[in-house]
Image (cartoon, rainbow, N blue to C red; front, side):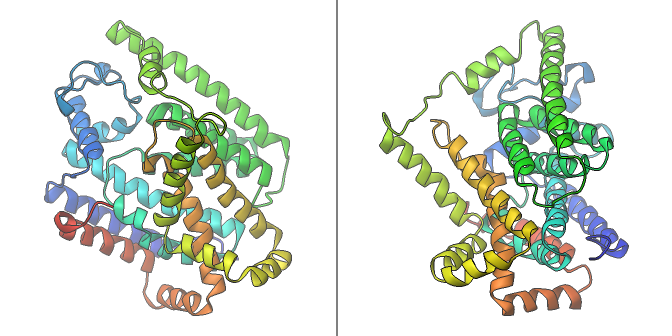
Length: 398
């Protein structure tokens, strides 16, 4: 197995491509038609105009015809754009630069984990194949929470792997959990669910203490609680009001929970909603999984019996996390396709690896492209972002 996912030359190519895309976003004054992205970029810009002491308490400032304190989420998604704005970047565009940067980091972290679970070849294939999923096109240039939350989730998984060998990874787990809380509040529960499932399945079969990941996760949960207390203390100090009380009222009080006995049709509708997104957004790789399971069930069963233990565990984690997310999200009356974003990438990753293995022609084509074109994933990502910027006004919003 190769010592690293990227060669030094390819790492530099990624840096150059990202810098070029960031420069293009700034030079063109890019703004998104996506309402959430436009809101986050606008609020970041207004925060950057004020003192750092007020960053913890953004307001609506008339966006979406709203006034008063903004308490949809904590301030995590605003912090990097505001800091970049202080460093001289146009703050509205800085929000999109952070968004595309998070997409690159997430892709490379997925590649790293696939390399650990499957192989270097599978990881290299994933770097290319995940770029063509519908969800990648939809979220190609956004200033939303989804990619940063996916990064947090992936860092937690990598930290849980590393902590089996050394306690030095424990702060990484805690920091990623805290970052997820600050970015999207209550949705940190999905990151915690992924962490628990990763510990149970242990896809990489990482050597070392089995108890350390559990201890690191417990420390991370304590860090979450401490962060919530400190955040509220700082918020009260600036606004005179609590953050979490109104936040919980906004996020959770209006919710109703559908149950199989009392609200079966409603629950079935929401399950179908998320299942349809988990099929469409990671296509064609999700559909490849369906074909393999339904049409080629016998060969799949034979593969399962002879596959390396890490690969079986990787499939169990990827599809298990999607099922877990479906179970957590479906009962709630507040639902949106973006809530299943991380689960979409779990399904897409499993499907992409399976497709490259099951259809040798696809695997060979991807391997040839990766070998024939230096830094092929970086160049493909860059080309697709530029294509998105050029065709943006005419692209459908799925």
